[in-house]
Image (cartoon, rainbow, N blue to C red):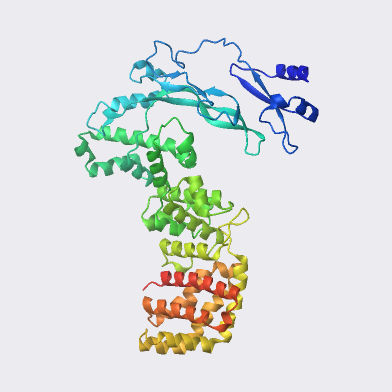
Length: 530
């Protein structure tokens, strides 16, 4: 009833802005009686009708601060009135409330002393102005503060969805609440790379001096040191945002970083050294192992600080995406804004860590990270589930496929026929020495390949996948000096001849064997270093 609505509304505190409130109406009779006023509200039983109550803004009692809102004589940075009507932009057909909103915008000069008092960072402005006096040093005279939003507030919308039901949503960062003079953060890629690589500010100054920066810019060593220290302080403040790249790209106002610069900062911060990552992924991502990065730093020639940064990045990415369904690459790109290739490398790291492959054995030390990346990518592409959905994870291997692989032992039961087909196919392609050796040892090679397939459904054997490939396949072939071409020819013939046999006519078994050999061939050729 209307009197109840009035009592309810009086309990709500009405601010100076126009507000909207929605009441659920339980009585269908009330709905039908007010049909003419409901408008776009659906009367169907599956949707809930609403009453939209509009309140006029209360009289404004406080005078606007000169520092906030623009006045007739204001020339400095200030907040100017701007009302956006949803009707003017063609959105009034689906937005019920408000009809428009005060968005405001920032305008004005940042060249006066007054602008410093409303700056987002007075220290930053003063330092930038001081450094700009040296006109030949990094073109600082071109760095000019700009009048920009320093505080934004959300906007609440009441709108009609596609099914004619009414929804409420809060949109962040829609209304300018305050303006200030802020410099776009100056990022020097050369200094930033030194910071990312873990050099101290004093080491960075020495390196830049050796590169001839002082001579090129006609700057003193003191000014160079001051500049590097200023950069290092900025990057240290940015580091927390780099841990959540979406915040750096979207939510920060204090630094005013351009999108291209923001993307560069993220990519350089999350880039990793192959040698360092090869050492890290063979260990558990624990605090103890993070503290023990000294050996990794010494072994790879990378600074300890850089090693720990890379360790933290891998752990952060792993913890974020390990339990997310769908594509690892897509999830990493979404949450960390990394480019495709870098996201793929991180996806391979996450995959290896999740499946806990044993890659730290002595016999596997020769494998580089590019080797492991290649193999992990091949496994992810061919052995994980082919369908996608909320219940499928990129770190889960296709269980039905793994359970089908033991059936490939039918090849061992028809070993003589398989051997005959392979030898006939390879005889004109290989040296006589290789052919004679293959004729003698074919059963050992066949049993090694088929044997690995039959045990992958067990967790322990899956973890030792790389070690089994080395011990059962690669080492025997190296002992008889097979070339890379010999190995490629053998694997191609072994696969094709098996597919031509009647024992693999069953579609599911044939498909499983083909999927298996595609990965085995790719991994063996990559891991077979000559």
